[in-house]
Length: 164
Image (cartoon, rainbow, N blue to C red):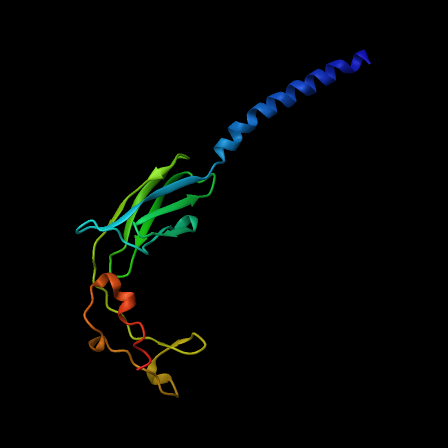
């Protein structure tokens, strides 16, 4: 029995050392949180519904009524990453952020930008085709029939117009 005491002592010491290192490993694996606010560059008004993402990490979030967003980046992601913010009626803005394991705050200001919508025909199966290749009638949505509205609500501008 006396010969096995050294084995028990070494095993106990090794177990205590490994148990003591557990919080260090767990802290290194904690996810990083990126948060901030998306506003209009002119006037600084908060933008609701903007999509903020890091495409390389496949992480995205949308802004709330105050223009605030929060992204949770997977544990172990370090280095530089490109944060992209976009919203209909505004130019897409990209910003470099440094992922160091600590929480990051990054605000983004979007500039208004006019975009021109292309003509698309979407069938019942969700297949996009040119109108001349269809063998049936298709409804047309004209921008002249839409009331003038600010670019911030472009997605609401055409709601309910296709049934006329």
